[in-house]
Image (cartoon, rainbow, N blue to C red; front, side):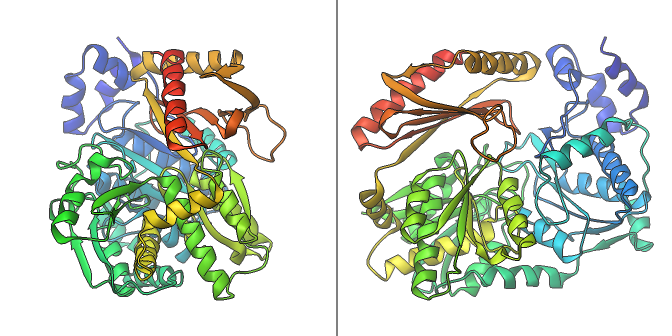
Length: 549
């Protein structure tokens, strides 16, 4: 029998988790204890449940005590905490707050669930040394997670996360300091964040507004998540008069009963939104994921609704912001946009047409936040104009240091209104960009590897791929290979990513997900619709065979 299971069976006091422990057998028992949840640059993420490989009050307590120990050695005294609508998010947030407080660390916690960008803003507002966000982003309802932020409001990057891990590793799950949450509130060890901080966040968001949006019809779904209050608030502030909210998804609910996978990247997640859009004849549909840092968009075009992917929205928003700022003479000299290495190179071409440079960073919005901090230290913070990643996350302005679906919702809606006044849709504008710079299309493929055996298989397949890199894929010659574990061409940290540049503008990037048991592949083709689709089909056939589980 697993020794960790025996220890937990003896020491767990929580009745619900104790009963769950007693019911574990076979594969469920193995998966609950075959490893500890790893604390990486995205913090923790796992299924809600008992065991070292799941999110529960004991795994949350262990991580929090480790962070508190790290903070104590540095004389750090302030932490900010928020959470989203997921199951037990409020419990985990209060568990963390109680442990920080017992360790002599002042806690500012949101009064209710709030979006990720608010937490990033809160960290900077209260001058916290560390921020904690309880969320599993867009994962299914069985998941939850624990993200950690530095004092700049950016998720911890590699070195800081590795240092934190060394402290966490030394903590026993059942030997942590704590104080009752209500007692800590009375003693002012824990304080609720002041309402003025929310208003400050919205005020700062509005500084990125470029045009009114009073003539556009909008449908919005928060997908039962944390965007349910702030997104409508910001839209009304920029003049939206026709806003329809999907009622079944308009309130917080961690069970996500109308949408099993609350990911606005997926068309299935937007079904109710699209149904409502047809009913009210909306111009644009927007949806935010449960922690309101990602934005999905669909627009009415030629009597039908078309979805825009993350790359297209990144390009459109960059083009819109740069064009308006240049026309208004408010584009600072030496401005730049920042994108991740897996995001479309079309954005680079668009930015260059405005005389703007593009900086590429590793996958993960934390690296975009890190770039903003570098600029801030050089007194050039205002040179950052816009950042995005292909997975539907973007940011304008620097008040927040993570992807922000509140500001992105505002900009997407006002952009739709701007082009509507020119009798154009966002699809029309996207087609103009394609015609000018090239028909860059992207498709992604994710292959899942569940459980202990799946994790081992995934690593084996990635190692084999790296050791035997192909010279040709789908009949296309591989012209250049970049392995981000060993490359020296770019000034970037090491990363488990391989990028293959094929002929005729085709590209393939392969990497493991940092938060889910997935191998993720990103394919770019840049010819025409017919040829691009043939390339996508052939490369996916190759990948499905190469990474067969």
